[in-house]
Length: 492
Image (cartoon, rainbow, N blue to C red; front, side, top):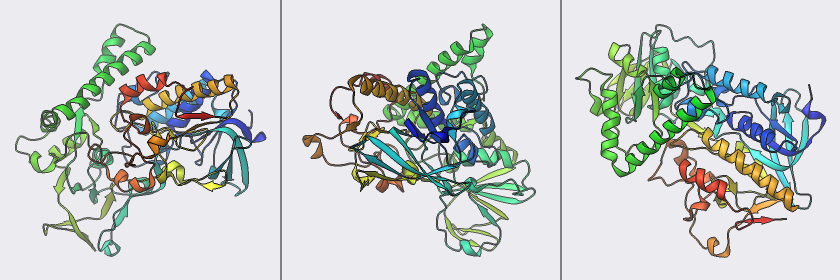
């Protein structure tokens, strides 16, 4: 097997061997077979989030027909476990000879661009030995995702140091954790909570979800009727995958549009879906009726309504209140109610990692991304030959991986055919006078991890090409039609 470390200079360096990096590697091999490349992965295995997150029940919160790649048919249930997703990624790696291009346990400390040589030089630590090596490439493809894998977000609750029980964030889950026959509290109301609770409920004495405010869910059967129908006629899996993918995308587009045009109707549809799984007298208004418009935060699909089944059976319960403080044996709420517990899971979200928390330099000047503007949420002003994959909030992340793969390969071919060694997006003099806005409009989408990190992220201006529109259908049309010969690109 080829050892990629025998040669440390490449045409392209991909950072991250998660779902984005593996997809990027596939497109390079398929569309630019003459380009040399390496994937630098800080972990000891591929998979990213699907490898590091090991809490009970870990699964996707969107369907695998759209979360899977367009080039690799998905044949399992639409909502998949982490193990199933890793198996899927392993097949992509094996089927496309990507394994020999991945170097594991490689932590990137910094990345420096030199305009004279048109090269990125990365200082990389080999984690097994502590040895520092330099890798260089003409193009840098950042596929490290947006999670800080080291530490999840835990609020600074009063009295937390007094709690005598066990407190853990799902990102720090280990195999030896024992929750059997214990009183468990899960703090949070998102997709992680909806995953953990049904997985743990059968073994706990009781599990309580403590949420500050309700969130939206989409409960339904964990099967795809369209795919099953197509398979009945023995269509090839490639056709089943493509047609099912298109059906789901159209259905999602219709519903997202509904949340903007008819938010109250969309809200009723979602809440009525939850009611179907609960007793008629259950207090849905308190525990499952959010105050915000649907899709201002991500909506998780709940396969077979499993968390609601746990509530109906009595193994799980909901408390909607705010934490006053932690006590030795539990949590005191603002209402005065006390929850006695042995074990608290802080499913309170994650910390955003901007480009892997790597230090970037352009011609010896350190880059402050918060003062830059994003070109279509994929390239950044004044930074040559670098693309950053940041997926969709209201659709599957991987849809953008495929679009970015096409764009990068088209850009690399264009540069080669014209003898260019660098491509940089620049704002015009007129655009430089535009007021800078935050990465995302908080009135449009406002999860906690983004609000806590807006100050770190690149900015946007009103022109749609200078922001991440979060619109897959618009980008599906616009990105392939970008005229590479025109502004905002400057080539050398």
